[in-house]
Amino acid sequence: MQPTLDELFKEELQDLYDAENQILKALPKMAKAASDEDLASAFQQHLEVTKKQVKRLDKIFQQLGIKPQGKTCEAMQGLLKEGDRIIQEIEKSPVLDAALIGAAQKVEHYEISGYGTVRTLAEVLGQQDAAELLEETLDEEKETDENLTEIAENIMGGATEEDDEDEEEEELEEEEEEA
Image (cartoon, rainbow, N blue to C red; front, side):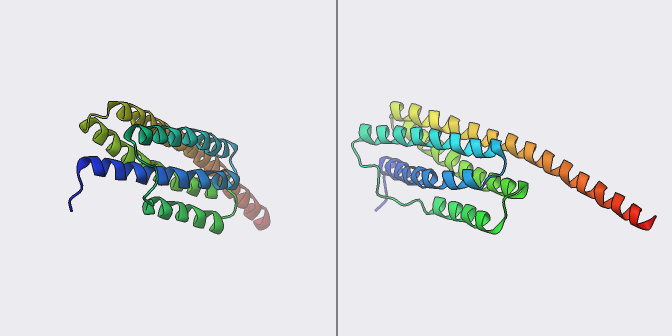
């Protein structure tokens, strides 16, 4: 049987609810794995933001008179599994930080897409209160993505300088050996 827009809206909300709860479990691990203080702090801050986002979803479910569970977000499971793999395979370093940012931005982009979809469905269905709450979360996800980009640029700038310094040291050592 074909789902209605209302059923699709509720199902997508349940998907996001599960995704956010998975993220709540993953963020502390990501913060602990980060070597860059700004990145670790950003993960900790986003943990607090995510808790507020879950509360907003709870409020929407309450308004709709439905339970906030029922669907597993398999996409988020896959994205977070990839993040776990990165933590296992790369030692704590700017390279790990860059990989963590990449993994986190994949999560953010999934959330931006999901929240954009449910916000639009809420508007179409005349659920203005829900649409406003979802827009607030959507804005936070976009802000987090931008923040991660800034941190990545700072880390990559620092890593590039370190690589240049390493290369200069190697060249000096080679010149000294030749002399």
